[in-house]
Length: 367
Image (cartoon, rainbow, N blue to C red; front, top):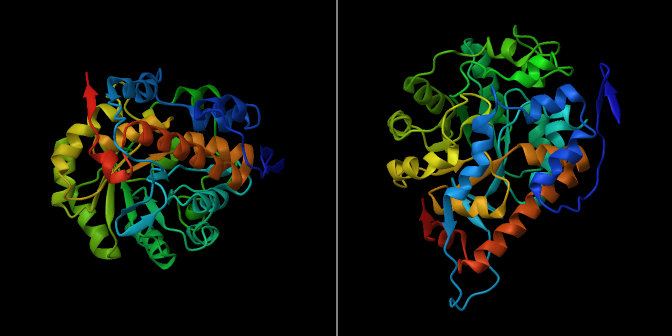
């Protein structure tokens, strides 16, 4: 363990023998301090939407196909002109130093090992440049929590472009913080700084709760902001936090080159729908005009399969990856992605789908 400001961080580095992704949570809880674990694992209010995110995958079933004369399915895919070994990516998630001393640097290294795409949060423990360097040229996105201060936004975007980011994820569903009771119970304040905030008036985040940090973020975001970021960076802007066809069409009309269906892992509007339950409708409205990314509740290869067959082009997750980070560092992160990929390949074989494009055409029974 490494200790910073009295907070103990894991410094493990090892491959993990994973039974399944849900089992990682209990193991990670043993080594992540209580406040940090509550922040990572918690959802808003009574966490109804958080739990619905995973159970919603039971609302559809995969139709097996056996007489397809195929074997050895491949998970390779290409999205946004980026060639990837897997459609599974890291969702942007704040303050991964709560789980491991190397934080996002180790996560980026693990994603690169597994051939997946890394997304770094504005509220990362490590800087944009250091996280990019840890990936050693592997593709990365940068996620922007838009600030009221455009100079702050511009500086982050400049750093992301300089670091070689392949796209900007603009999060639009967090203009205020969800009511997260675990943070209140634990009186949680970030014990470690957030590198991307350190040189601005917001401070580095250390000693603050997430509600205080969100207070510096923009409380209103309009379609014009999507266009402004796209014109400034000349990178694809992917709008994250979309749960309706209406918002998807507004974003595309404003120049978004990607739609990211997510309810923030059940951390924002409790009582809203599971993200998977709205994915199909949103993807139908998008109608292949731009790629669709999906997250919230993904824990199984079958969940990845169902999301792809419902219109997603990439499927993201965060909590299980962060638990893998705590338990095994970069190798633990790679272990999580590889395990999920192995589950996905089993599902692909049994469903008679050799490629990710085949999965996108697979038939599901919807209830």
